[in-house]
Image 1: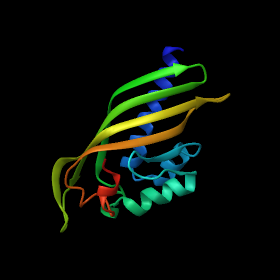
Image 2: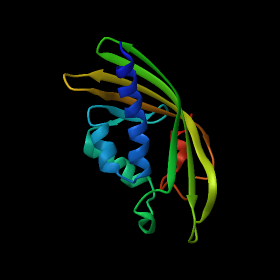
Image 3: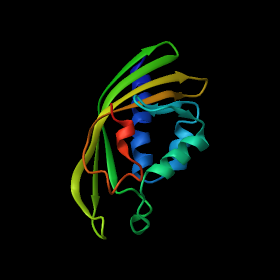
Image 4: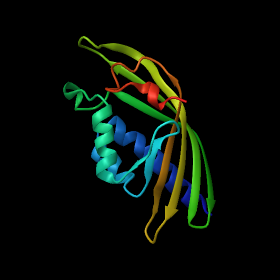
Length: 155
């Protein structure tokens, strides 16, 4: 275990947030291409295309704002544990959103809080996700963010 391994893994956590906030769901699918993805209270999916489709079908994007969801996913307090070529991480997330105009305008506010539980493996080149479980703990007003009922993802 080296500090560079921990840094590489935490950068994967932050890259996920960056891709979602950019509305790059194909990029999210690629990042999680070798992983299973799901909530602690919902079924998991896998494969880059399936994961990208899940985000595209569930998350609102605003074309007038660069086709982004107008969010910031804040990944906090990552705890990374490495055992050889395998690793796990636990972290907290907070999603804030601000939609400035239109009938669904919402002020800057936190909309979702929860925890990520991740697993990683290292191949000859780099670390990659093998699993991401999302535990949604608190939900605010997600009407301007989700196109699905979030109650299926809450515990």
